[in-house]
Image (tube, rainbow over all chains, first blue to last red; front, side):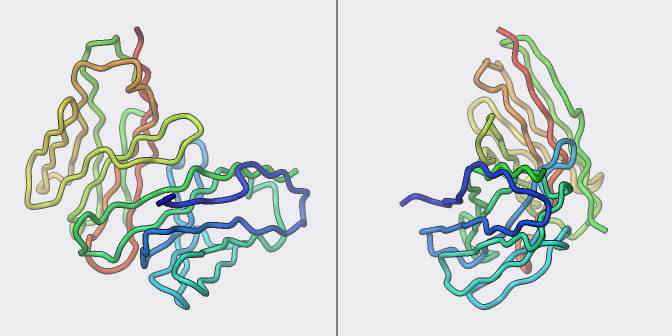
Length: 115
Length: 113
């Protein structure tokens, strides 16, 4: 049971490039999400999914796309990277609301620098 | 919109002293309040949580209190140790329904040996 696994851990992109951050969980959680963490801003929700085939926007969705073709995977795509997207990205998962032990589990983080 | 404010942003204590971090939230429908600890280079991990039908919860050296009337909740760490040094986040959410967990901005705790 690996929990939430996200890759890559570090990435440097040039402005305008695209890339995908991968996230996978093996806990059969229905809910998955992506956050970005910036100094003094806490964790801000980018996109989330309440189940396979269902995604929705969070607080800061612009410049990012997501898809949820399986329960396990929830990739985050940067369409055309901008320096403002330099941040630490965390993938998270949890069981459905109301479930016992409804804890959010976070991945280890992906450090992205856009130059 | 919903908001969680967390204070202080930085806290420095001597080993053995207590540390208190305070949060306020705006959405009166919030009924679940977790606290996360984030060590350097790692993702946040849940350390304790409290639900709205409880006023206080303890787990060894950590405790959380909730005042629903005032929309305040606090984390108390007693007998601090250097390994408690980390960033702590509070959060507020509506446990049922959507994925609406709002996080505070974080408190960087330094415990000096």
